[in-house]
Length: 184
Image (cartoon, rainbow, N blue to C red; front, top):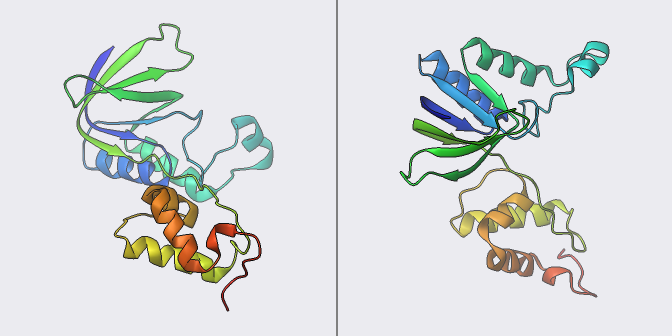
């Protein structure tokens, strides 16, 4: 299937939902894609409808944001992977899980928003939970010109291993070498 929309948002977490809702509220035709079974991302992860019926809505702010996007006319496609870019350099190649006629779809969009989120990758070493270490890592990331958001572990992986090594060394922990103690 080949389709063209005004805006394609990849990632149905908080940022993707907000971007999709805002674009649709301004009259654009928006498709929101996510691999997970339900929108919400890591932060606004939604429980199954059966659980919600007995336990109530989990993360009401996320539930409200999802409702806002749907009310604005956003077409939400969960269970869909974006696995590449077509030869035209603009269209996205997608695969929707569980669809009877499953195949490769081509989704053209005048604009794309990539809001795939971040997952923390912790680098444990002695003293790694110290607030001073976190501050040093965040400062080093900023000083190296990396523009990131999220946790320190995510920032480190976004800036590469050599930046990680420098950050840990400058923090005084020596990358977790035996016998090293935190700076005072």
